Length: 111
Length: 111
DNA sequence: ACAACATACATTGACAGGCGATGTATGTTG
DNA sequence: CAACATACATCGCCTGTCAATGTATGTTGT
Image 1 (cartoon, protein in one colour):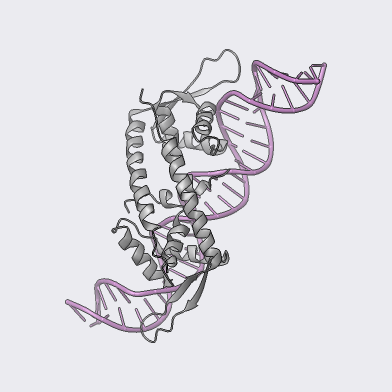
Image 2 (image 1 turned 120 degrees about the vertical axis):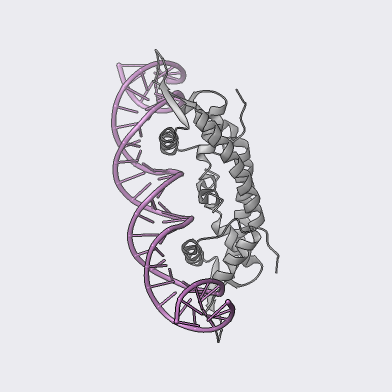
């Protein structure tokens, strides 16, 4: 992977919630969408993805249900809740703040 | 603190190296400068700061020496090395990339 | 027929970074 | 003389990431 995961750490939830803002989806597909949107530069590791789902569901940000696939592997779909939408908005604001903050803190005067 | 530390995680080293790009400095003062530059919104916890120094020194990014204070508490000064400067440049590039990547990944189509 | 691969979900155990708590020592200020 | 600021340092816990591993189904190439 080309991006250090510590730089993405803390954004996993935001990234997943952003995907679910566009409608219900299941894990594998969500990760595929992330890969595509990143131009192949980034993907969530499966362990990271599924532990994020567990975390978000416990926090009430998402809800899950099994798809009715009659063929192929079963799919667990996720739906963003109202709490999730509020959380997402809040996380977006945090990101904006953090971005400005970091940009500010890595400035320097060359000596 | 107003900023979630997971959003800053992975930037600690960059932030410290940026401070040292402006000349040698010691831990306490570096943290004060960070607080000032952030407008009081952010400070490194001491445990975080000193473990970052240890890490950076082990990696050869910084070197340390004791100040010659004849009064007051002793100060351990840090100097950025050539390796540190290269690392810093590289971290800046990583940040630029990560910023664009995240901005891209948190876009969504409202439904 | 059968291997290889893609789809799809899930858990375990290890690791790394951040940090609260705590400790040391010195100097200043009300 | 208590409170506070300066200054460095370590220990142990917590959390998020991830390699490894496992399960099960469907497709494609030879």
